[in-house]
Amino acid sequence: MLPSIDSLNCFLEAARHLNFRAAAKVVSLTPAAFGQRIKQLEEQLGCKLFHRTTREVVLTREGLALVPYAQQVLQSVQMCLRAGDGSAGPVPMELVIGTRHELGMSWLLPMLDDLEASHPGLTLQLYFGSGPDLMVRVRSLEIDCAISSSVITDAKLDFARLHKEDYAFVGTPELLDERPLNTPSDAKRHTLIDAHPRLPLFMYYRGAPGAYPDLSFREVRRLGTISAIREWVLASRGVAVLPLYLVAPDLEAGRLRRVFAETSLTFDHFRLIFRADDPRKSVYGSLAQQMLRHPLR
Image (cartoon, rainbow, N blue to C red):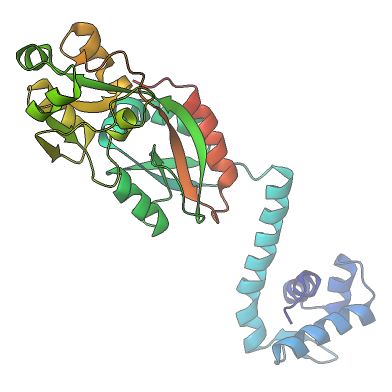
């Protein structure tokens, strides 16, 4: 059984005054009730805390050792009370957010100061990785949360929804003029550039209403990250499905052209993903609301 807060408070007053009658008056107890509190505490701890005679009260070695720990306990209790009424101020908190390099640099990094300003006491650290890597690190506690469009099927993970993520099937005008891609048979002349076999970006075209279901490409090259895919597509080394926010400037400038432009690709949502048992869910929810006020770019 743990010592009560009241008993520790009585002990500290007795240690400060070295006079049980004076200490009892401070805590509004009779001398008899005060003495009983000290006796109960000594019985719980299994040691004598004071040497008492008719002339003086002296702390024992064990009593002297207890003083700083009892003080820490009471200070912690006071901080708990201040936290409860809001007077303790912001509690320092550090979170590591994982994200893809492209999204982190273009969207998350520019809003970092705003997120921290809206959450006093919060320090945000960044980790860059691929979608599968991010999920592994959230599960293994290496990072606290991650921003990803990965579909969450693991009951141990939870998420807050962020921005909608649209996609475009694209290639350069030079490549598509040289080797048109207008029919399913045309795909055999092209290289598809994608990210991961388990999380292919091409699924956003393949699952779209009206899409050709059985496109067979000359080869599939996987580069792991969308910035690398975009570089190869811009170099006319193949075609790819890429996030619209990333290639919108290229489409507007004519550096890229849509493939099968009549087909509306399926879409996804970015998610702020965290462990379902993480006690900081309210913090993640607040961060997600703040992130939604910053458009993708």
